[in-house]
Structures are given as C-alpha cells and as structure tokens.
Length: 241
Image (tube, rainbow, N blue to C red; front, side):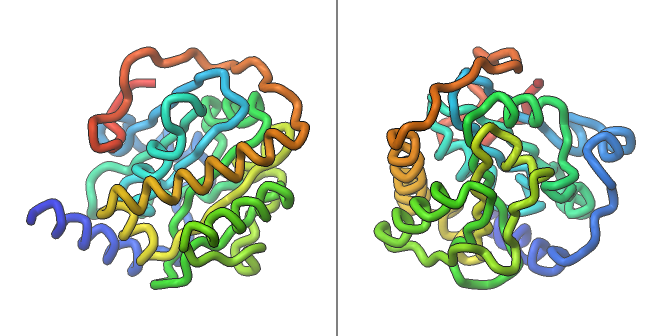
C-alpha cells in the first residue's frame, strides 16, 4: 500500500510541476549544486551495443521512465539512467534533453548508431508522442506500438525532440524520443506485462530498422559496468558510475 501511495504522490507531483522552467542550465550546473548519491543516482551500462536507451528524467521527475528504460535495454543494449532521489524538490533536477551533457551520457550517445529516449509529459492521456531526428525509425516505432495496442502520435508536433543538441540525436543516425502521457507511464510502472509489451514493440522496431542496412556498432567509450545495476523488478539501484 505504501508503494502505491508513493507512486501516486510522485505522479501528482509530476503533473503539478511538469511545466516549470529548469533550475539548472546543464548537467555541469546541476552537478555543481547537487550531490550524487544523496540527490540523484546515475546508471551507466556500456555494452558496446549499437543502441543506447536513455532515461534522463528518472525517479520522481518523470515517474516510470527509468523502469521502462531498464526493461527495454534488456541485457544487450546500452543504458543511461539519471534518477532524482527524494520527493519534495526533485522536479528541480530536470535538465532539458538539449542541455543534458553529462560526459558519460554524451559518450554513450556518440558511440552508438542510434538511441531511444523515454520521457514523461504532463498530458493525462494520449499514449506515446514520438519525436526524434531519425524519421525512419520513428515511423517503425509508431507502427509497432500501434500494433501492440498502444496509443501514439507521430511525429510529435508539440515535443518534436529533433534538435541535434538533444542527447538522443547525438548518435551516428540520430534517435527517437518517446514522450509518454501520465496514464501510460503510470500503467507501465504498475503493470510489468504492459511494460514488457511496450519494450518488445520498441525492440522489434529497432531490429527492423537495423536489418535495413545500418552500419555495425562502433566501439563504446565508457567503461562497462560488470555488476548488476537493477534489482529483480527492473528498478535501478542507486549505483556508482
């Protein structure tokens, strides 16, 4: 019961504060004013894969995105998760994707062929709004999600996520940004089967795109993390880089 109440409180906080302007101009600014391990955790898994999954607004910033990113990355794709800790002030740790420049995240993005970024948006419903600079992959993702029974909008008119500065677009072939509505993110957080279906659809789209003649993966530049970074439920642990 406590877990359910905590999740509900996190989503209520997200809805109330999602439109607020960023307090920190970039990751370096955030790092200068906040403490890793107390205010936030960072998960970096470089598996030398062609695909990286990002959740740069995990924890109570955009609830459910970190769990979904861990599930979708599985045991073979690269993963980067920034997770805000606590509850009362964690919306302050939001750094927009175009300004999110943690060197570890940039290294993963630029050494990947493509990336997927999972975000939350303040809309109560509407499913996934699909943006990013890789139009071909974006279209495949939309098709696979629709086939799996998920609502989606593509391209994402209000949150296009197409700028080259966006962390998800910094790989060789750009990337895809998925902005999940509140009900979608909450359902995937509370329903592992739904989260699994979402990730299977996403991975199927990426595999189709990769099989269409994309170049093989480039060598990664971030040291691999050998120890498990997630517990049995797929929730990121507070870990070291």
